[in-house]
Amino acid sequence: MKRRMAIACFLALLVGCASGPEYTRPSLDLPMGWAVQAPWRVAKPDDATFSGSWWQRFGDRELDELEARALANNATLAVSNARLMQARSVLTSTAASALPLVGLGERVSRQRISADRPLTNYSSPNFSTVQNELSVAMTVSYELDLAGRVQQSIASAKATLEQSSADYENTRLLLTADLATNYFNLREIDAELRVLGHSINLQKRSLELMRARHELGAATGLELAQQQTILDSTLVQVELLQRQRGQFEHAVATLVGVPAPQFALPATQSESVVPAVPVGMPSDLLERRPDVAASERAMAVANAQIGIANAAFYPSITLGSVAGVDSREFKTLFDAPSMLWSIGLSAAQTLFDGGKMQANLEFSRSGYTASVANYRRVVLVAMQEVEDGITGLTALGRASRQAGMALNGARKVLEMTTARYDGGASTYAEVIAAQQAALASERQSVQLQGQQLVTTVFLIKALGGDWQSSAGAKIAIKD
Image (cartoon, rainbow, N blue to C red):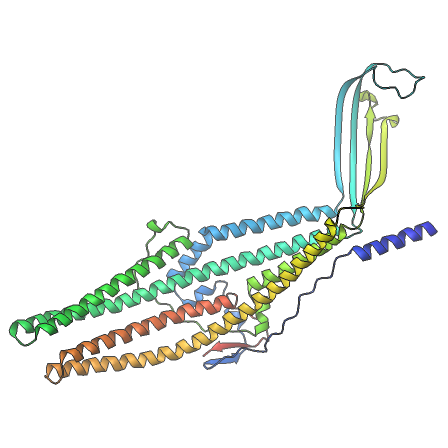
């Protein structure tokens, strides 16, 4: 009884000393809310309006089709999915270590034993024999996980699977956001090209009128040259925008998995609308952003690695057993005298390794420290991106309204200046200046609309994709 109690106490002490550190997510000093400005307000979430694909909120069918093609054909997403499948297989394989290993072995042989083999007894000579051997045996082995190595390995594999799942979601989010950003940039250039096309038509008509006036002697050669220069300058801007459009089009082609030479996105007038984006509390980022989730799971993996490294200091104990039959003839193979069995424990303990296990333990602890620092960095970057998106959209909204008023004013100035020139009260230089101001104001208005769409995509990505807030959470939405 005393020996049994001593063994039990030793095993309990072994388990207590060898178990890995308990994992807890480190706390962060998060603000209570975002530094929002008008037109943002606090509201309750509407879970009924949740959609699995955030880009559908822009109401652009062509974008929806491109996103579907990207999710089906993108090579980077396929790589991430394959790694997720690998992580699942690793977890299944590692979890099997907690179960007994059962095997079945069969052996059929005919052998001749040498008569000149070394003697085991000087009084008993050796003889040469030829005989058959038939053997069927089942083996069972099980590692007693007293040091917690197996459980820590399973915990590490499970956390790795969760990290791979979060990495896949993050890859999906980045893919869809990059595609939407390139698409909206391309459509913004299309809008600019339409503005320039309209201006080119007006400038060509003005050039024809100016040339006719010059032939009649009502306009100077300088005025004709100035009008031609304006037209040439506008045509140059068109060429530069076409170059930029080609780059965005090629980027879209790569994201949807199509070679750039085989892809074309015709110019159309986009019908995208800027959706009202709910902004959750800063702590919501810890649950919604996949990159934050991935970095948090990386801490769990690093924590489990400490337990695995710590378990190496303790003995590895394996319970093994064999049961079967062994005979020279098949007819007696399953007779009682042919039965054989064995059962026992095997233990292995490293006595000296030159500090290798201690170095592995310190390496694991340093890895955990690095993962904690990386987690804090990812959270801080996430908060910065959300704050940038909120302030950016707010500023762009105000700028867009101001640009609209500036455009209306520039158009009125152009009309008045043209009328004054026709009446002889203004010079043609004033007309040219008014034309350039109106064109610049219209282009600026179009650019701001495109920037609002791109910044909205940026904010949605910063928030972790589509929003499905838990009941009762406070969020801020755009009026």
